[in-house]
Image 1: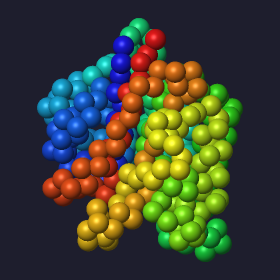
Image 2: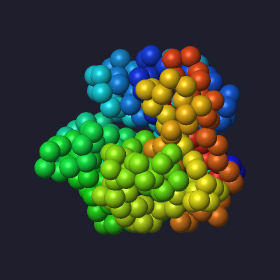
Image 3: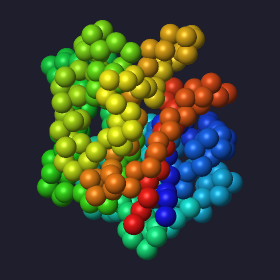
Length: 267
């Protein structure tokens, strides 16, 4: 069977929940992973999941910040034995077992810290948090090698030269600095493959985020690829396609991120 998994930093679920109908039209996903939901669990708008035909919901949220959720047409079971990253309990990761086609699939939904504006450990504790988070994730998956797993989310790092509009100008900008890109690539190397770059060569420009500061984001096209889908090596042969829903950046009251989807066949 084929399954499509979408990931999107929605930048406030309660504000933008209606846009999930557009996401459904554009990607036709079976599973949606959301980041930056910004809503505590008791106020989560459960009705939107039913409205788009997804009866199964897991969420991990807090007031005003962060937050992740998984919406699915398949049954979900939360994976409880995941780390409290950096001991902050800040709702940046949710993992679920999905029962599809009679075989289990693990879905990891991550929202990596943005890291502030100054790429310096001495001056910026937010940057320290980001690098420590990435290293903890790398070490965790090194200790517990993943299988039949998909890892998605706003990882807040554009790791490749053509994942940013200007490699030279952004080398010193948080999201594309060498400590971040090296850390992210080391994490991915613990059993994962970049599912989107499986289809798009590394020498081609590819973005999923455009700043609100750009008045005409499409004309300037100063984007970054911050949103990712990884699959374990045992799933690579099942990869069938991907889509970056670029038109979402022009939706009413858009997020600065756009949804990304991948389709794969599960044996």
